Length: 456
Image (cartoon, rainbow, N blue to C red; front, side):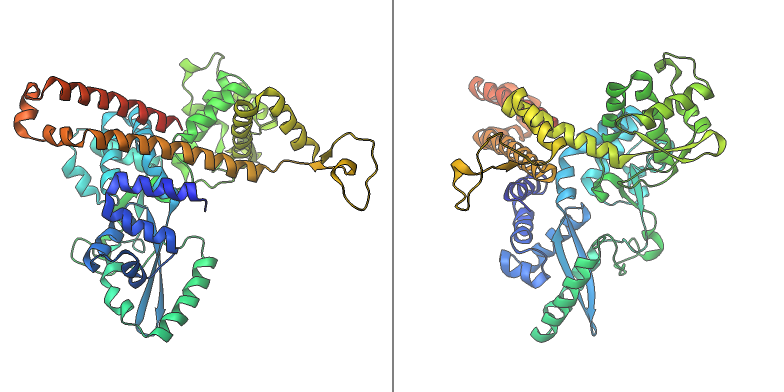
């Protein structure tokens, strides 16, 4: 993991959860997966503080854990989940998507769950008052914006309860358990997504754990809700606005039918897709033959948006996420190359990508000494390496924006403390003119920086 990504993740945790939680998170970043005893030694905090920080990190998807049994002892290893951390900054985009689909109530539910992590539905119903709350909740679950936590994915508080047994294990047993845990962790791609629930009270009993819910996109860390908008816009740019509307309808339909993988979605029939189309967004008369032709056009496009899964009933179509993701990745890299090196640099990059290894056009034979003046040099591009370099550039830009925002906040920290006083909240004129201007300038700069972060 690159140093820029680690620094950005630490800054995100500091902003959302505070300095003490960031201290525990930083120990996991530096040391890798650790037992509770290792984290305690690295942070030099009190056991209660470390336990509560780990609870917060796991509860909000910023860390994960895996268990292994050594005799009668239970070994729990903690590690960082970078995708869960970075998605914290995209909560406003998730809330906007919920607002567009389900109204104000949907946005309030998303914001409440992003604040509290895993919650019981009854907590949502008691915290938010709306006449359409139940219908919106069902809609969020149906469209996979919220997912249910099963009996095996209970509260992380159980992990902290086992800490005394872990730290009391003999050194020899600890090393043996660590080796087995490392092997299990490396072979299990879903480590940390499931754990046995230990009863910590009536509210967290296993009979009720199946009703706990969380933001699906925040927990999975694989796809984000705004991807639907990106894919629909891509279909609109590559084909036409009708294709963009068909793509939107197919995405909305397949989301409600079941989970989606990185390769493709569940399949849907032509009549089902037609029922989801907004006729005011279509410039043609919607018929079965027209929709079938549009889907075939999308399947045969240079970017195959859909794949045909079955021929029955006019055909079953699924979203081809694998091809779409590959194209979007290449398009993003090309935009970065053009901005940094110009159109000539982009043409060279594309030539090397499509032609493979290319050398300089020199009519000079190579010699055994490999002198530069008498050697052909072959050039090529690697999309994964370009993607890694672009990721580092994005992380560095986002980190600089966050550090600049922190600098602005520190400059007016004293004034912000005054704003918390009840008399100042009732009458802001109690502040001197200079301090009021400083606060206004700070709020304006903070909003601009926040917008820049979301654009990144």
